[in-house]
Image 1 (cartoon, rainbow, N blue to C red):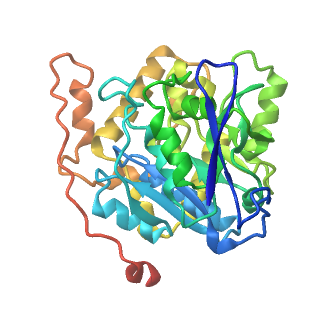
Image 2 (spheres, rainbow, N blue to C red):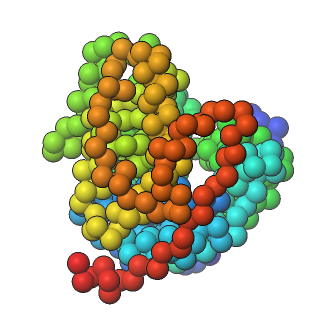
Amino acid sequence: MFACISIPSCFSHQKFSCRKIDGINSNAELVYNGNAPREAYATILHSAHVYVCGAIAAAQSIRMSGSTRDLVILVDETISGYHRSGLEAAGWKVRTIKRIRNPKAEKDAYNEWNYSKFRLWQLTDYDKIIFIDADLLILRNIDFLFGMPEITATGNDATLFNSGVMVVEPSNCTFQLLMDHINEIESYNGGDQGYLNEIFTWWHRIPRHMNFLKHFWVGDEEEKKQMKTMLFGAEPPILYVLHYLGLKPWLCFRDYDCNWNADIFHEFASDVAHAKWWKVHDAMPNLLQQFCLLKSKQKAQLEWDRSQAEIANYTDGHWRIKVKDRRLKKCIDNLCDWKSMLRHWGESNWTDDESFTPTPPTVTMSSLSAL
């Protein structure tokens, strides 16, 4: 059973935690025995399918690291049957959830539904969950994190943790506590990470190599940048987890990191990290790679951004690279002439109608095993 306790703090509201109690002895400690059937990796997709490719690559990276733990993905009704079939074929156990709205978010804002992450605590058929964002790669086995307590995470600074990789102990008690206070607790960043930091003020810090951000901070010395680049590309890997901030690799041409196309994204640009992601992509079965194809509109946007980089004459020179991405020749919607879109791209009277994308047949495990 579970007992909930309130922990006094310097904030005006109470902080809460739930501790597991085994048997009759309420002082018993939960001992980690490596119970694989009761441990799983988990991620969540809601409101759009743009991260489906990322989740498939993340699953591929977990298996390449040698882990055999369950993979659980929470999705809402906006994720189509076709995309669910790809997730299942990649190894994810798909569970449908009802989204949780952030009551303090604006309508249609990026953070409107990110409190859906609280559903992780309802996965009570598992004792431990390692949550991972869908935009990262596991480069080295991190199963040992299952032996660590809730919340185990890397630090963003001296007091706050990053919720992109974290150990969770599912509990309906904790889920209810999270839900009970969503109207009163203010998140420092407007999202789930800020909210969870308000609740879990006691957390277990792990080294940043276990959730290493693809980011060059303003003020980083050249030596620091070179060190990060070395870590991104090291073989065998030094990092355990590489977390892709900025524009995502599968939404760029594979030829170079499209974060180079706009100066506001240069802090996230790394061709070495970009190539690392594509190496995992190329290890995926061809049938799963189709979930990373680009729509015609996406191709046009990338080419437009590249032309703007040329006009700006960015000194990194990535706009000079001849794009050979094979996805350019594969059309997945009815309007395949993406180059014709560029003639009117950016005009104020341009009609930004979404082209119809036919729904492909679902992917079955039998078709995958036939490869």
